[in-house]
Image (cartoon, rainbow, N blue to C red; front, side, top):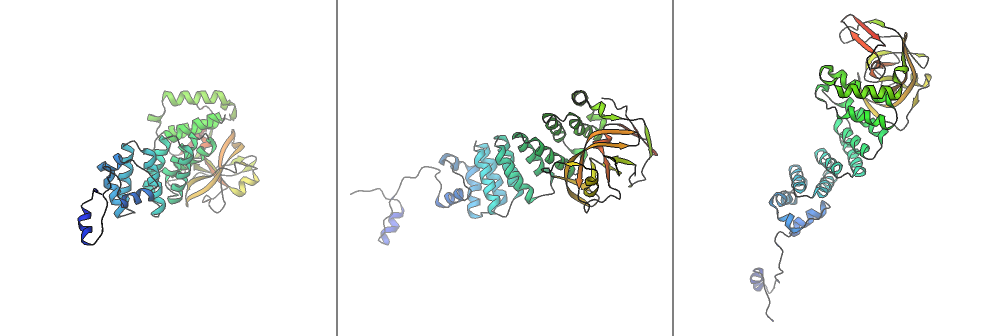
Length: 357
């Protein structure tokens, strides 16, 4: 019987072996490349494997299974070829097998967000945070995933942490601030929704105080009755020396504190217990302190008073006593001060209730 033999059969004849020639589709994976695809938990059609932009990094990963440049090149090539799910899966598999690789997980999360696979994106973003717990990007990506899944309270925690961990605020995007405001709005906490917007404006009033931010602030103030949540007259305090803080007589739920100088009103855990602060036990945020990064929980004070100035329903962060680097019971932050008109002339700090809304 006549048969089609590969060239290898000529060699085989010398050793009494015959190798049948099986027609192989152009671009079909060789055994080694097929093993690499299996290791990366993806399947690709021969036409995609044949694409040089895909086959090149695949071949490199076959020779060097933990080649970090190659996995990023492969993911980019797969995404360009329309195989975004496979791009994400390959990067996740690579990271798990090669000791953890932040850029690969970051790339995977971004792809999953675009695919609206928010559950998977949250899971991988959490893995990213475990690898790099003090980088803002993992928290920001997980916040986006939680937003997509409508887990708004958890998303706010991550946005707060992302903002706190971001290095130079002069270069930070407005996305976290606006998204936090929207999440508070969805939760019906309209006065709280004003806080991230006012924090954003405070970074650069000349550029950030726009008709959009003012319209949002006015709407939230009306919806939440926020003007009625503040009262008092103008109060003056000596400005802090360079590098110092101002100690002021603050009353939180009828308990006396605290210094000034934080994004949120931040309280020691022991003081928060005495003040009967209601904590959201499911929350978890990370804040910058004088001692570095500290973990805390979000809560809310019924009232905070600074002499005649008084505000109701003020968001706070509660830290363990050991993490607190301040000399008093807490720090009076923007979650209280942003509700008032604060002016500093170098020697005096003036705080008044006539803040425009």
